[in-house]
Image 1 (cartoon, rainbow, N blue to C red):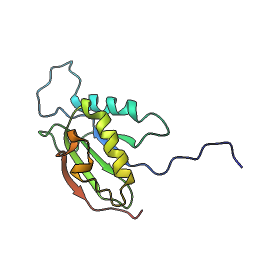
Image 2 (image 1 turned 135 degrees about the horizontal axis):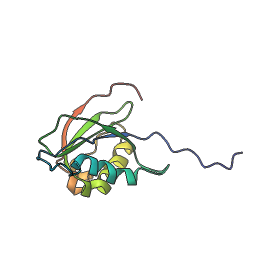
Image 3 (image 1 turned 180 degrees about the vertical axis):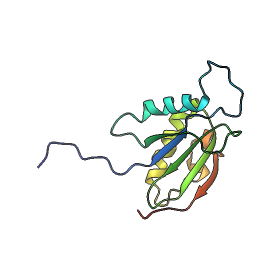
Image 4 (image 1 turned 30 degrees about the vertical axis):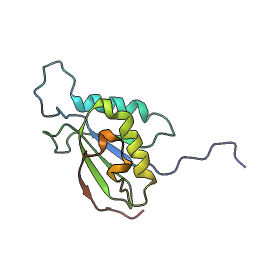
Length: 130
């Protein structure tokens, strides 16, 4: 019998657009809002018990709709979220945990944190089996 703790189950992949300008013109030295969101979520995804695996991406094509993220997991629908910002990092982790617990990936608006109730911009069917 091993003294090692059980490894966590599969986690969803949370892709965050780090190049997002959130539909704004930025100053030369201004950090992109997408990078700020990624950094805020990164602090919450650091441990083995994190609700998601974080992936930086360069564009999710929601450029005029605030910061964007996509969540996916084998056998589940994938969701595209927009209108995000760094202040929503904790709520995004709550959403990721609910997504992981859902059999299909569906998290009804009434089950999402209030800040994310209307942030789903699209969804795609599972690309691979569970």
